[in-house]
Amino acid sequence: MEITAEVVKKLREETGAGMMDCKKALSKAEGDLEKAKKFLRESGIAKAEKKTDRATNSGKIEAYIHMGGRIGVLIQLNCETDFVAGTDDFKNLAKEIAMQVAASNPDFLSREDVPEASINAEKEIIRNITLKEGKPENVVDKIVEGRMDKFFERVCLLEQPYIRDDKMKVKDLITGLVAKCGENIKLVRYARFSLGD
Image (tube, rainbow, N blue to C red; front, side, top):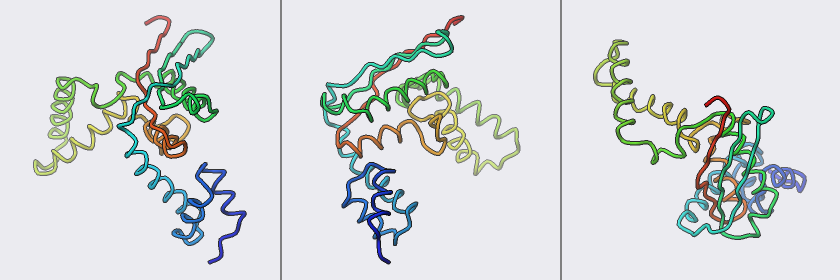
């Protein structure tokens, strides 16, 4: 199948990937744009994982005020260089994450931040509910693990479905920009303030 310049350009505009990467992805996907996007995303995630150990000493503090000043959010998003911190993509990512925090009010940044006691208590509650539902003992542990994933999605910012596309998690949004810009990006911390809390 012939891959036209228009299709390559469209894929490039939609993903931000390089021209050669787009051509390669379209070739592997036999011209299917959606399959090519998936391939680029998967290869980007692999590249991004290699960058996670690199130092992130630059970045941006983003402030977001919502609902006429009733909710305020501050986030710290770090990257490797001032150059990337100054790009529109990076600034937009910081703004989107701040809006996510305003909308979803997560309790923790990541799974690693959830205290072990809270995890164990939640597992026990879910296990008891699952047993009361009459599920067979041999599948209860699998059901508990699946429901724990839902728990982490609810309480951990990085695990939450992205407010604009619930097929993506917040961590996928960050990984996508890491793959695009070639630098490590790390969400360091956040704070959410709400009148009445």
